[in-house]
Length: 177
Image (cartoon, rainbow, N blue to C red; front, side):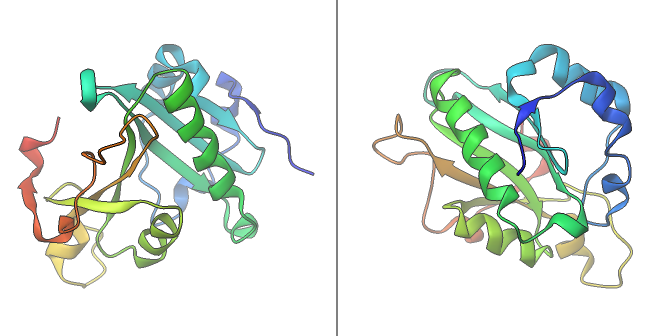
């Protein structure tokens, strides 16, 4: 049985192997520790998956943001991502009074896009050149562009944080805060 527990700084040394996954965006240790020191209640561990998020924005733009969700390959397809996302959504709603939760995912990462859509997220907009090129030989635009995906929380009763035609809306990475 897995147990969800608060993140500890020493956990940084346990999930480096997950960061070697092609689809996991990696950051320097000071980036993760900065999040941990500022939003400790939005960082948790379930021994195998890791999730890190933050709260940002004001007013109806107040929301939770999934900074990193990583699950080791041997623990995928067990429902751990769904459990973690539900936990982060609850913290964003109850602790931070957010209107939605958002995340970014590469446009070519169809497995993750399908997973998040299954969790109730939808594409809000396409962000040009959000990521660096993977060098896979695919369409460079798709490798570098990211989808801003969002899920409204109960506080967003008018569903202003989502749109039906999000895949048709394109913005520059410089326009994203």
